[in-house]
Image (cartoon, rainbow, N blue to C red):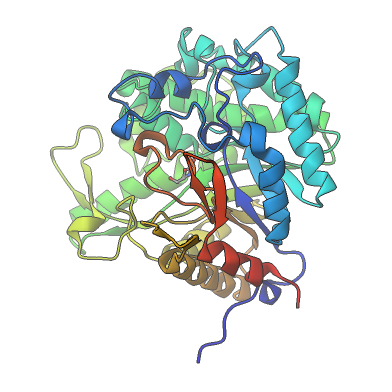
Length: 448
Ligand code: IFM
């Protein structure tokens, strides 16, 4: 019988944890002086979210943070990645400070530390203050000033205790989904919104990094990227070219300017349209020496050429059409993807450390007799962690792994049905039940 993998095989310094995000878990959307975010407004607008579900309460982490952190502790989880809701601490995005919002994060941080859990803060996980969206949001270059104020306030308030920071969560997803496809907040479409949003988010990575480094020289500063292993549908030259374009868009677009390599315009000619938003000095200002890069991988994508897709001429061959195992998100279960992505980012020079800051899966969970036997999620986690071990044994620069996610929560436009949690939440009663996968993670992390 195959020996079950254990965290000890990764060595003592490998970091293990769980990841969450403010909007997906906190609830208390208008409590104690919090301002609305673009996601509050988007999700409260009928027709945007599956079954018109909202995150007004979600898993109520705002009131139940102690219960959740204690549960984490009982599961041997030593690192907790969460985000700061910008409009909870700056209700209008800029100017007036909401002390009660700051008090909330102070309580979360202090309680983590009291439980011997290291807090890892993501500054921006998609919930821009609505007041700023009214001024153009990420399409307005002023966002760099507003974002700097938010980063400075967060570093000043929490930096005495928080030593690990991530500037942005998956900028490709929030600019692509929110400003090009319109399926995420703020629901904008078209290239004229996407391109400036992309360039400003790109500059915000380094801007945020520099502020953190100046104010908190002893902290570890990272940022995170969504990434997928891209393969062409077959070896026809036009499909190979389509795969190169998709790779440039989905995997290279945000990291390469940070590393001083500029935008990958050669492989993705449509990026030349960015030129009109790039001011003198921008590409120099895009560079920043992060201490670590967070990679967030869930699946691979198979792509083909298509004349009908504007700007890109690339089409994703959806997993349900490929006769492969999928999750509830219709994402293919393909563990080698995470190994390939570690290899890809490992090949860049000047990335001191890679950390998998998200990986996990949504499957249909059955809650029966007080138990959730989510065997598929457990298998998904084990097979992905095995791939990470393979990469580590080959000497790749990989230093940590965070499961997405701790409790079931609000999965953006999909609402509550695709649940990714290690812990089941009954959204009527807010009762938490550790799933079979959560029990497995606890055992996996236990010292023997
Ligand atoms: O829930 C999201 C998270 O907010 C960002 N990364 C992917 C997860 C699963 O879709």
